Length: 590
Image 1 (cartoon, one colour):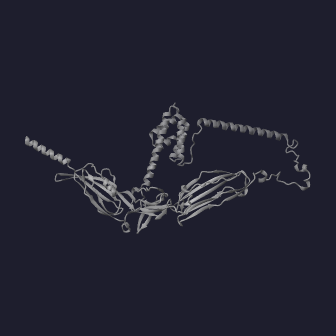
Image 2: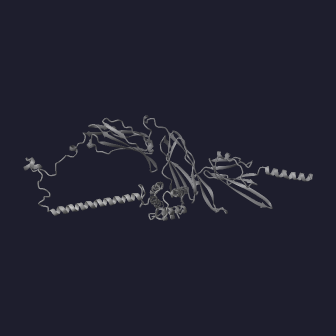
Image 3: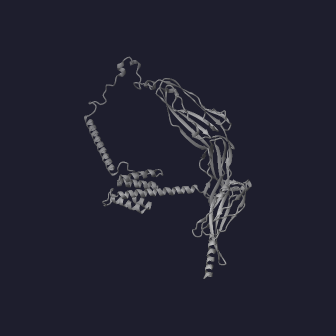
């Protein structure tokens, strides 16, 4: 018995020690020498393990970015001996060149061995023949503070079906970053190889002098390898990366000779233009003049252009309008525009002098101070307009005969012959004219009363504000028709509700031939909507005793169902647009 207990104790201690002992851990690299911009795969294998383990990856953050991770576990039997392990595959992106150490990592209670890789700089020879590479370009190595710097990122690829493309976000302190337009896509031959190109352009405006550091740009995406998971039939994907080196830009201060009291405006060109809405040759007291001044700056945002303060002008009341500020993109450059309008009402006779405008700016091409100028304008103002000044009055279109000009009576005499006389017009003609007039009057009264009755009948059938069918199908009309449908639901008026529901359905399904609730319910494919539409039609045209009040609950439910239908449709559209935005087009069109 004692020997049996000793054996059992020995077995228990052996099992306990085997369970408490840390699992063997090894680390390997798929390669030890790479080119800047490429990734390396670190595989950590934990023996005798099938579940998840604890690991600390923070030591990698100093020299690497962990791009992707995936795991795989295996089990096999050799000579009736079971072996199991789990592999952790880490895709690492080196952050700098040269010799880089992969420090020991704490995994499952044990540390992995230290590994090392060597990262060579990227050259033209290493780019040639690659199926994916990037480049980053700037238009200048040195700029002035607040000057526009153009920064372009181009991704070249020959791989089809790149999904979930992600670029490094540009984040630079004390810098205004604006993306120019939308990403551009085209094809380009590089060393005889046709590449698809995905291009993004930015305008950078540093707000402080010194050194502007543009970070390295990294691209990450996914492609399928053609295989699939046997159980779930999911396509296996692999992560692809590319890299473009950043820049250090020298940002110079504002020149000392620039006017100290002026707003700093570095640009390649600034123009100013003045227009008036009235002719200066015929300005009178009380007339209103509108003065429009337009600024256009090549290389600056419209918000950077300063407002103009107009001094007061004697004998003129001035009413400034809110400015119009905009930006556009011309030839890859930002062009800013600012428009200011002043309405002026003249109050006194004389000559008024409208002051001009002078705007200093710095030409970044010639590196000299220039001025955009509008000269003073002189406006001569006449007295208040009168009828005699504008359009002389006349008594008639015919002139008087000189031979009878001495007789005022003959000049102003009117013909004394009556237009209709009793001796010339028979009595029966007058009676017939009176009868026809009375008949026409009676017909007019009858027509007015008939139209009034028809209008009252329509108003009783359809309340004010009830929607009518929109014959023209347009995307923007759907939201208006839906608001009218919601309003009809709140009015609890079944005829108006029916009209509003059909009007919405015509716009939602873009079908001008949709004219009844049966077609609408069939198009939605919703059984509950169909049942409610049937109840509404029975209440309107059948022998049902139901009215709008008894159907109030179903009307509210109908509004909820239609709202959910629109929401799901919008979510589907948003997802489709997002999927399209986050996938690069195939390089070769099929």
